[in-house]
Length: 126
Image (tube, rainbow, N blue to C red; front, side, top):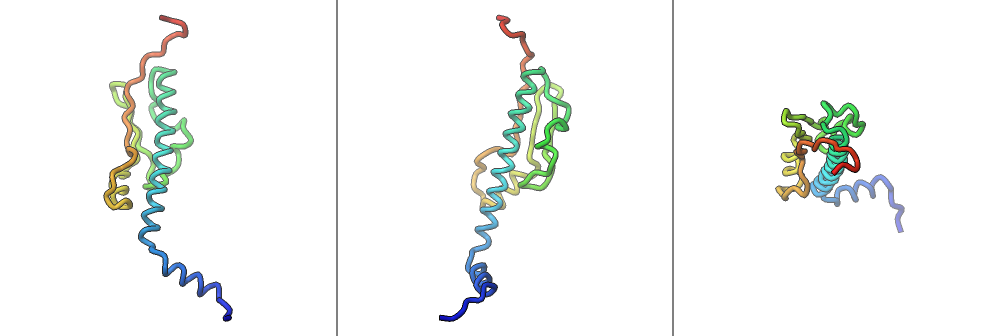
């Protein structure tokens, strides 16, 4: 039996791995992480809207929104509309998803529109 050189073995293993599939899998994982962050922020915004009767002007009060999105590397886009609704978007998420998935349908949206929150009511009021 010969001695296997670790460097050579590693190079051979990496050559035998299908890199495009790994890149696509990594991209899909990042997309899933980004969509989970998006949903968490949507829930936090919705809760704030239901308790205060309005959505915030910006996302500065939400630490998860401060960093770049793990999928696109861009900050999340947030818009509060005049009618009281709000839109939270992962910029360029749809286009990048099509690249890494080979055109598979998106399992979750990259943009969510929040309806205008109802006015808060006092507890016990009918």
